[in-house]
Structures are given as structure tokens and as C-alpha cells.
Length: 98
Length: 130
Image (cartoon, rainbow over all chains, first blue to last red; front, side):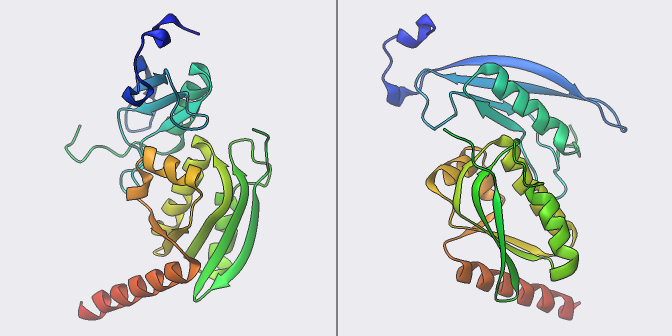
């Protein structure tokens, strides 16, 4: 176990280590970069969610807006699930035009 | 945690098709997929769908995507989708992923059917007013 998890925090304080990644979603109307933040929980609050990954942008905005995410018992599993989720639905642009 | 395949039981609740899920809704699912099943149901039986989650014990992020894909299919066809009585774990997942704000979640099948009927009446009223 990583030493930072022994830092003496109370489980209710939900200490996490953040990991950042970025990936380009290739689309016919232009590439879009998604930044993925993975939260590694010192004390997992939910079953199977030791690592929780979430993208910085939504997809499928015009019908059912979805924030790509993924989780698992390892960093790699959460990242892989999140990348699959990013690929699943089209990025349809943000409401503010970004 | 051991793997359980997804089972989909089909029925009727009011004017809506009732799909009762049990087992796990995950990427490793060998049942052919919830969305694929739904795409077979909609043309044959209509696009008002209730998905009962009371016996669904685990969902991964792929499974969450399946639910969003179902909602997308239903919305594009002009229908309505309701989720019913998710287990505590699935409810937590929907909350963590903020999908509890995207889906309408009801406590019972009857409540879900009534909710869809109210939406149909509202939609018909809007069309009549045009």
C-alpha cells in the first residue's frame, strides 16, 4: 500500500490522490481533447470504486448528456473504462460553444 | 465478487413495456446487451419502457453507458423511459455519475407507468395546443 494512505486522515475526510491523463477523441468534425481525472481513494467509500475516473467534458449532449467515467480496483482498469466511455457517444459541443 | 450474467425478463405494465433486469450489467455481459434487446422491443411493442432494477446487483461503467444508450434510443424515438427501484449499490452509482438527474427514477412499476401516462397526456396536450 502506498505510504500516503497512512497519512493519518480520518476516513470521513475522504483523502484521495489525483491522477491526470488526456486523450484526443477523433471525430469527423474535429478532434476534441478530454482530460481524465482519476481519484484514488485512501479508503474506498463504495464497492469496487477504489479508483474513480471522470472526464472533463460531456458527450451525447443533444439527447442524454453523459459524463464519461470508469471505476475499478486499479488505476488501469478505471482509465480503460473511462476511455471506452469517451469513445461510446459523440461529443456534440458544449452549450457555451467550447 | 463473482460474475453473474444479465437476465432480462419482459412483461407489460399499463401501456409500457416492462423490462426486469437481474444479475450484473457489465462489459463482460454475454446476454447480447441491454441496448440490443431494447432495439428489438421498441419497433415491435412500442417506445414507452420501464426498466426495473430491483434485482440488478452490480453495474460497471459500461453498464451505465448501456442505460444512457437506452435512454438515447428511446428519446430519439419520441418515447419515455423510467427506471424503477434500483438496489442501494446501483442507486449510489447513479448518484456518483450524476445520472440520477438524467433519469426519472420511480419506486414501483405502477408509479413508473403512471408517470409515463402523465407525460403522454402532457405531450398530447402540447400537440393539441399547437
